[in-house]
Length: 332
Ligand code: MG
Image (cartoon, rainbow, N blue to C red):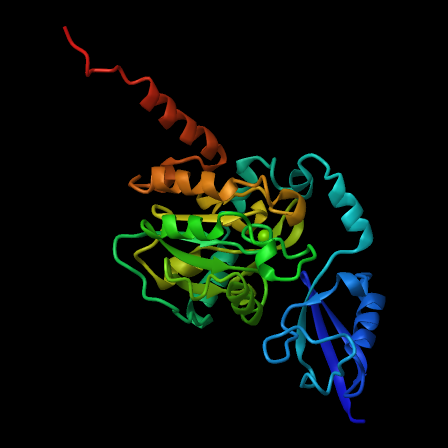
């Protein structure tokens, strides 16, 4: 009986160290230990990267038999009972409540944007952060930067596969926008998990579109806001510094948390968070609507002339204009 010093379980943005796991510890025992720490019941736990020859191992199997190495990180999906109870009667606009910066006046954001000290931090990221290009960037394309959690994927609900938690129409969305935009994924987690999640969702090897590169939390910076204290944000300046073809003129970023684009408020579009996948899977059409918006604005010379807070109205305006055009096929 040899020891596997610590296993790490990652659940949402938290990491839990599960100590004293041995090669003869069963998966059932491991799940009981995870329950103690997270409150997620064993029957609701899905350890996504725990696989034996591609299959989910039985609970009776031991840690040794599935070949878990010391210090390995397991990705947990699952919800606590209280969260599930809440999901069956979701409060209206739950996302809005959580998004504390949503109603902020633009003024405060601009103050942060221009602060010298943050420009210095961004400069440091431009110099030191290494981007691993997955696919070459194309000429004359605009740039779309996407968050993962709650934007493309409900990382907190229970499911037997990552696919069930995918936001509806994800692949259709990416396929459509890829015609006009190069696509970057930026998530406030480590590169390992970004790669893992993109693989789980079938994004990485999708034949219909390509992702240019992934950015992780190391490309983010902390900024101090008068109202909210120290917050981590995703400054687009890091990308713009590395790829001068891109700027505020041709870049748009989607995130469910508005503060992530505090440094570039005009380039950010705050997407409605995709939570409680099982309740919302059948009705969430955000990505379809947003694909349409991105197509409509794809030819706009300067994105700074757009107001992404009103993206739904922009679409509406175009539709009205089209349907009210005088019918000139009849004459005389
Ligand atoms: Mg998010």
